[in-house]
Length: 142
Image (cartoon, rainbow, N blue to C red; front, side):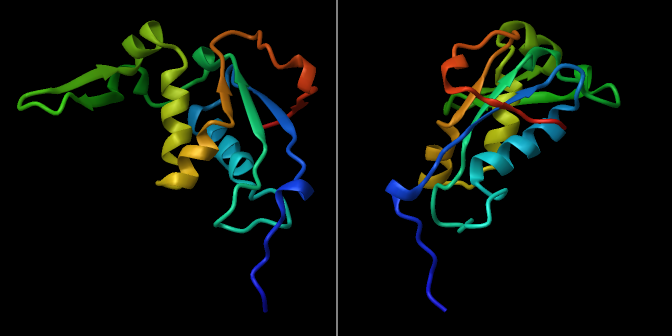
């Protein structure tokens, strides 16, 4: 059996839009990662970018369960001793409302060159408006 390779000229990339309002953050991230990776297509291969573009709107209105709004902490490190900083989800959503959604989706993509390329196909917006209407995105139901 030969390795399947889809040539770039034969690839058709579609656009999908996901409305995150009132839906669980993790469930949205899983669906977005599947579409970005191309796992919803029959010609999926793990070593190639066959995924589509994903637009997530209303990212700031995504829901968390179990009181995680006040318990979930996002960490970052400056690289210096004692440089570990943490920020609670409720503060993060005020400061940068798209970051928790981007963080969740990025964690579900492969690490390395392919994952970085796939992440560029994700567009996250805090509100309901997005500038990609010309691409005619399809609505994804979750």
